[in-house]
Amino acid sequence: MNNAERNFIFTNGTQLHVGTIYCIGRNYSAHALEMGAEVPEKPLVFIKPPAAYMYGQNAIIQRPEYSKEMHHEAELVVVIGEDVPHDAGDEIGNYICGYGIGLDLTLRDVQSIAKQKGEPWSISKSFKGSAPISTIVPVSDFSTMYPQLTFSLSVNGIVKQVGNTDLMERSIPSLLKYISSVFSLRKGDCIFTGTPQGVGPLLSGDNIQARLDSYITMNCSVL
Image 1 (tube, rainbow, N blue to C red):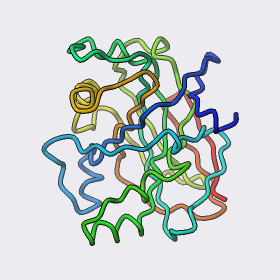
Image 2: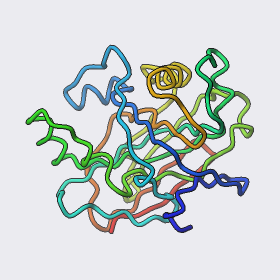
Image 3: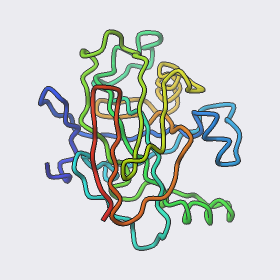
Image 4: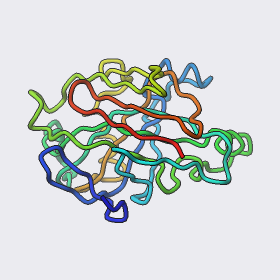
């Protein structure tokens, strides 16, 4: 697929144009601990633009020249299929159209310097191609709109990260309600729901395998 199209690809062959990518920080307490941070009182949200999207299957990931340290952060991704009305309430899950797994690629050296200076760190998180996302499994393939899911990431055959929705500090419906109340959620938006512990560097030549239970396996590599 031409990434310039920026479409989610579903396992049933349908496509959906990519909108805003909302990302949740520190939604797994063990990851917050490994980063020397606390779980925030309210959801910590940052945004990646559509240009950050990359169809992840067989993707070639390239680290920007202005960084020397790119890290993997594997996350469950929730895709929104219709505009969410402001009064969706407990019915907000009805607007989910699918689930996938994604990589929140992070330029850790650039981010660390920005944090030290108290400056925004968008260029460390939201650069072009910083959000590889797998093929999306339609929500109809699950027995519930909020399935319990396990996901994992391996680098060169070694498991680095394992996460489960039960370990999230904030559930999927609570995240959707919060984001919708502050920003809005539109058709084609997606949510990166947070990364578990085990984040680490990616090097040239690395082969990555990300799994979403038995539903999806995404293979990609680093240039």
